[in-house]
Image (cartoon, rainbow, N blue to C red; front, side):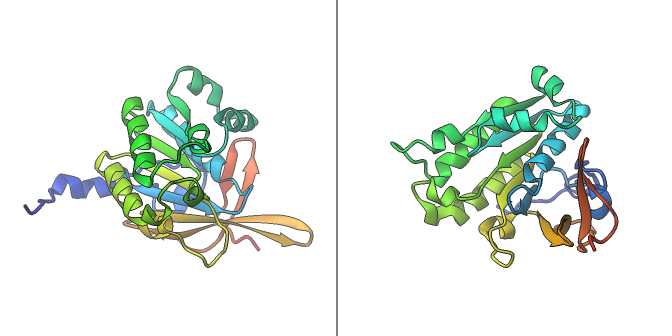
Amino acid sequence: MKKVVYVGEILKTLERVPSGIPGLDEVIGGGFLPGRVYLITGPPGSGKTTIGVQFLVEGAKNGEKGTFISLVENPKIIVQDMLRYNFGLLGYLQSKTITFHDLGSRLLRTEYRLTWNELFNTILQIINEEGASRVVIDSFTSMEHLVKDPDNKRWALGRFIRALQELEITTVVTAEMLQGDAYTDEHYLSDGVIVIHHFMRNYQMVRALQVLKMHGVPHDSNMKRIRFTDEGIRVYQEAPF
């Protein structure tokens, strides 16, 4: 049966979900599209997890439930690291407006490995139980080595992303950028890809953000300087050099 697309669904593309990253929404046409899946990729220590938490905090400010699902790192350590910023994160955790879930402890067990479908279904179950409208999944890096059926990733991931879109969950997924010209299934299947770069110039670290793709919204693909501040990561409307 042919699916009918209604005008109301099309008009939703005019809505925006604020990213919570100062300066980023100006680069991506006003914010994320609701119910879409976005990939944040970059080298270690570039701020991917910080961006994810800022995204959840922005939603919590507006009463939106947010869920952070960690696939590797201990959530307690992530929270401790995030407390350095003036997010007010602790208050949102105490009110359970933001929740953290630890899937890493299960994935890293040696006695049993999940399939891709089992992993994604577990994530969907958590999201449904939490009633979250914003979700962060951190991080997809090296998951191929932790699942039973690594070759089934593209099909299972496509099915998972479609499920998130149908649930109208705005999702941020993080992954390590291992090679600048090596693209993974997440790059192709996500609705948007934001890449974080860092460079050494005159013995100083220079950080930059670039929108590689962003379906459905006008966006600036030029590199923008970013800095870590007491409020988290900020994007500046200037070139990094």
